[in-house]
Image (cartoon, rainbow over all chains, first blue to last red; front, side, top):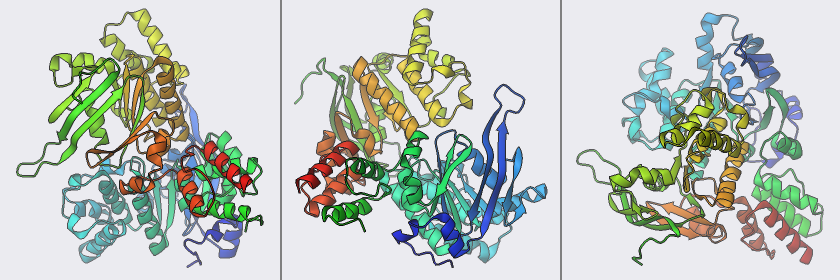
Length: 312
Length: 289
């Protein structure tokens, strides 16, 4: 256990590098000079990912954000071997995932990828069977399989009485939970979620994110959340990786990243609404830290400013 | 009031009910219950609601994709239940759905956009003009000869919107059409439809659950449980904090912040909806203090 203290805003204040040093986080995934080029030799030749290098640390909650076409989807499909690098390497626990191409299936069990709109991939007769599909393919049977399925269902908030329903009788948000449980049931070391809340309403978004946060806290497993909602990323992750036209533009805690809000905006990215209010207040001369990104934090900044004291 | 639909009304619903087909023996659940709405020509109306509130069902009744199980829907006075009028109705009200992959038909962008006007028998020089204008309106002119399947999701959705614009309908209904777009793509689509509304007087009905897309609307309708729960200007609707939360929607961060500051004793208005208004109101209140 790495001393992570949930809900403590302090942790966002230190730089990722400082955190890494203090907690001595190990890299679980290492991306080294990754390049992926589509349509080589055709007029449409284009590198979606170009010489990208970064690490994903064990147990962290990493957010990846980028404009459409920045390379997010191409990148994450490399992390479990769905795409093969044009050049460069992906190391999982220090080992090149393509060292033995025949064992790539094992990598897919260890790095679970939940696609966008995963509910379209449900196919079994019952919720239970759908969740069991992955772990059964890993060779789990009997009580062990049953345990995996029930635990995964519980983690994402599926009730026991829903397990034997057809997944197609459930609402959109519930279907998505079933699809998520199907990946969690394989107990991957790294769980990658591509836009998990797209198309959900605000209450549905918050519920699903709460499930994901619980999973992260209870299981201490690494999570990579891909999103284009800055608000969603800001409220949930330890560290943000910002992608821009096939490269890593910046990486750091939400605070570090939002302190460079101007650069984010010029990269075509959104910044949280609260950050934009704070930036404007700062412009107008109020002593406000423009890198705040929650309503509560900005309220505190303003109360401190009103008292005439320096922001705490 | 049971008045005749006037020229100023684009879409009118009367006691509109809709129930999706159910399995034998199951009770019918009404997705829409007695909805009375009048959408004025040239207005920009945002329909909000959580998943399952009936907002998409409502949108689909606006051009006869779904027909009422009870009550009526009129488009410029034309009854959507009258099969003979359906073609005319669909030329007046264009619809853009959530997933662009489901509504792109051709292998080249310009052919896709020309599809509807071709089917309407528009002369070819006019089609050329409409295709170019529609592509310019969604900021995709440079992609005129690209293959849609090689575009990103956001770009595809803008092509789908251009396809509707090329039909030059009087009203465009967007059913969560921005849900799959990133912030920039969403902003481009929003400014496009705002411009169409402003410059061409096109009526816009935008179904969404992104509250901030409603900031600049003329009117916000909140659906809950198949009924109209709230109806008013953005300022009127978004300052009803409790009512919004009760329907499963969130309050905009600006209003949330202002509400907290008021409770902290700061003299700020609650209805400064946009980032600029909100910041200015706070600066003003702090300066007065």
